[in-house]
Structure formats: C-alpha cells, structure tokens
Length: 317
Image 1: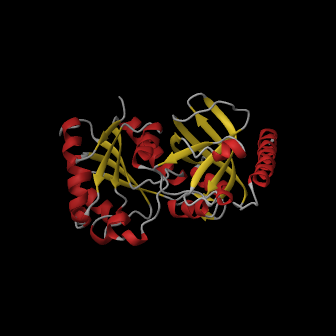
Image 2: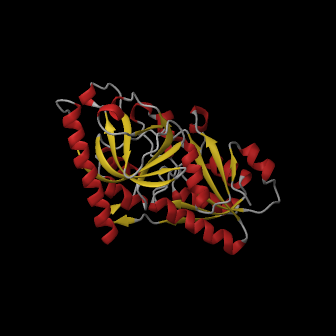
Image 3: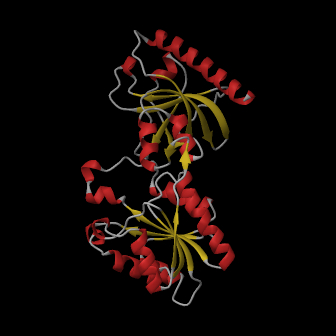
C-alpha cells in the first residue's frame, strides 16, 4: 500500500479503525534517520512481515526541545517532509505525526502509551532505542513502557545503539560533526552523505560574470555545514554532477547572508529554478576573503581541480 501520513490519532483511526491489522511500531524523533534509527526500523519491518502487522512509526513535530527548551533546541538535520520521505523509503507502511505542544508535554507516560500506542495505533510490537524516554518530564523509560505493554497487550523490544569506531551513533553527534565541517564523519553515522535539499534560486549574477557560474540553493533545512568549500555531489532533475560547493558569506563581495553556491563540473546550463540536492562529501578549505574577483577566481579554479582529484581518487578506491 502507498505510504500513509497521518497527523492526529483521529486521522489514524479513520484509516486503521479498531479491529483492523495491528501495528509493529517504532517510536522516536528520528532526526537524520541515521544508522541507529535504521536498525530500529528494520526490526519493525522484520516483525511486521513475519506477523502480518502494519509497519508503522510514531514520531513528533515540532521537536520536543523546541517546545520545552526553545533557547537550547538543536538545529535539525531534516525537515519533517524529508524525515517522512526517508521513513517511507525504508519500506514503512505509515506514520503518525503527533503534534508536540505544551499540552502534549504534560501527558503522563501511562496515558501516552495507552492513548497513542495501544488505543490509537493498536500496537502489537514496539521497538525503541535503549535510551528512549517519554511522557511528562520524560519520566517514562523502556522499563516503564514494557510494563505498560504487559497490561495493554503489546511487546516492547529495546534496540541497542549502533557504534561506529568508538562512538555511539546519535543525532547529537552528527549535528556536531556537520557544524564542524566533518562531513565524512557525519556520513559514517548517517550511512550516507549529509545532504541539503531545496530549490535553485537566482543569485546576484556577480559571481557568474566575474568568477565562475554557480547554482544557488535555497533550503528550508536548519543545519548548514561549517562555512567553507566542499567537494559535493549535486542532483538536479537532469542528472547527478560533481561540484565544488561554497557555504559562506561571500566576503570578497561583502556579503551579509549565508549562501550555498555550487559550481558543477562539466555543466553549462543556465538554470534559475528547479529542485536541487547537494551531498557533502569532503571539506576542502575555509572560506576566505580575497583582494578581488580575479584572485577569488584563481582559487576557485584550484578548488575545482581539487574536486576533480577527489573524485578521481574516490573512483579508484
């Protein structure tokens, strides 16, 4: 069946009324859908296919920290649409997005598990991360959910974290790597390169005239990599291209806003709109201010050669 998106318990029950197939359910925020999240979802899919359950996800929007601790809330790796698309791509049948607000934050662990997990989503099996917390002031944990499950008729399985190298995979760790420009480390935990998605928007035109042509990405994503120049893979509707991408303020031209500008290798089209995805593969250098456009152009030409070398080495590896 096509992936279903539902935004209230009422919407879910309208599609999956009482008496319909039970669910194998994953619960969590799943920002980034990293290797640890993927392990939880694969366990849900395995159980669902073996038992005939609906493979489902219960997630939250906005991120709880944006409601409970807005000053300390993290910049997220994904928009809600990206998160749901990634969940669907793994083969999950449907997701319920519970709106997290001040009233939701006051719901006790018992009420949350009964109202959402048992009564709304008819859970037969629930998979969560080992550090899962839920309910008022996060007073519920895996042990509490397991005990509630015994009374309400669902089984709970705690999924151990994934370790890459000597580090536990987490959204927090990935955000740190991205902020620091360590995109290769972030990719190891994500299981894929960190990517920004959005739309091509016209730039000022100065770079095209004086330096090299670029495509400018406008994205709704909150977390940008550290300012600098990167080797990237850029996806357009017409294909995938190697690129040198600058995330920065354009200091040579006294820029005041962060832009994401990609020079695509062996690409000559003049695009002013359309979807675009930039995948960050390796960081080349910090952003720098040059004496003028010609000095900047020479550096960008050197960056382009570095990008060519990067992909040549990657191809041989």
